[in-house]
Image (cartoon, protein in one colour):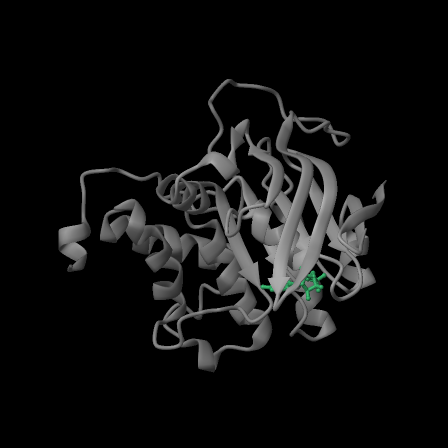
Length: 266
Ligand code: ADP
């Protein structure tokens, strides 16, 4: 299918500033600095994720209860094997729990068919990975624009929004660079722009600074923090081993052996 075939009449707001989804135009005043986020986005109850390793069952998450409010910046910490990736996969709708319920905005993910789970993922969730996961043969611009193809955004609008998002992460001069010509920090900034392409409500990041030097890591964390400003902040969920990264979050959840052992506001 060509780009032209994918074009539709749908008009997109091409305002690609680095910020959250569109406001509802209620004219609400800017929230104060101590903004109390508006409601529960995720509700996890008695979550269990059981894997089978040969004949041995592995309980990666057990009886896990967690509420995440819209607009929170939350870190998930814990030693290797404590269940961080498993939890992120469940939150991202990439996997389903073997027991318990996960609601995203009231909708139970476990009862969704594959197709609606795919739609939820692509409309509401942006993913950022440690390895960046950019397509090596596409330019920075194309890597961001391609995320909008499943949403049938017109080609010109895809290009305009991708350009503005890349400008928003400081890469306006690198639009036509392939990933191999970008530093690790720049590649992760492209990945963040891509994650924002469809105006997600939540960004799920798995060790987003794990492959970066401290200066680039600081830049990437700064960008994630910027998503917290505005009147509809994006919810940020970051799994990390790095206490410095976790220290930037406003709430720190620690896992051990598949259970929450600490949950503190920073
Ligand atoms: P973390 O991200 O904190 O390192 P994981 O969520 O990857 O932890 O893993 C939690 C536990 O579940 C570990 O014991 C791990 O070995 C196990 N596990 C994860 N994925 C699988 C799988 N696909 N099959 C079997 N066991 C798994």
